[in-house]
Figure (cartoon, rainbow over the protein chains, first blue to last red):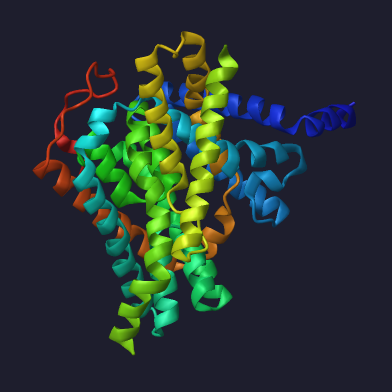
Length: 254
Length: 137
């Protein structure tokens, strides 16, 4: 009997994922209401549950893709993959007021630049403090602190060793998780209640996943503004990491 | 028809992603440069253009709106397939670098938001109660 059910669920992977995520969302909303009295938004709890499930999946299978490595939940990989993620992000732009976006133009660009340079300095400095003193390792770990995509792209371009690349991915991933979970809590302190600050946030906090998830849990209407600047974040990082930033680090440490 | 909205969204997404890849090749980086951002700008422009022409029907809007509303569940699915095990094994370098950059960026965001204050969104949700900053720090 179980074999029959399992086969049915595996053959309809994406549909299983829809049902599964729906249940996770429902549990999160209930937890948000009962346990936190609405202080932490249901979406944030759902994302944390997702990350915990990713850890469980990764521990069980020893794979790289969290819960998606479990055959029964392979549809999660499709539902949360780059294709549907980008499709859904773009759709959120439909609610953007063009006039608001124009207002944040210059400040958004400044935030974007700061959001690449500041984390890079922090990441490279901490790498130096822990004994990674060569320019390639420092640049790769610093780039990882920008986003978990910029890290490996930079590492591959510069020929960094695989453990340094893994470390840079880990840095970016932990940063994304911190942004996801921490944003709703720090939202008021950061003044995250208007499109302009959301765009500044998107540029500075980086990682599309962290920014959009964090904003979604704060106020869904802010997502497109944050995503608008955040989507340029990875591109800018991939552009500056293996070039300008690497040259600066090399000039500093020799 | 709802499919018009979904198709509009799909065309904008594809055009943006292709232009982002093209930009990456032109700049010589192995990455998609702002593809999703370009797609969003295209969609905003398409909507403005269609509204002026009167071609935007309610059904068409629903086709896009559905995917916008599916965003959070998609992010949950995305979180569920991250390599969390490796991230936790990364050790103190990864954790410290991540915390350090998040704290510094958070302070910068707070600074910019306070010095360049924007207009809050209208019709506030009830989720923002007017209480002192206690939780922030």
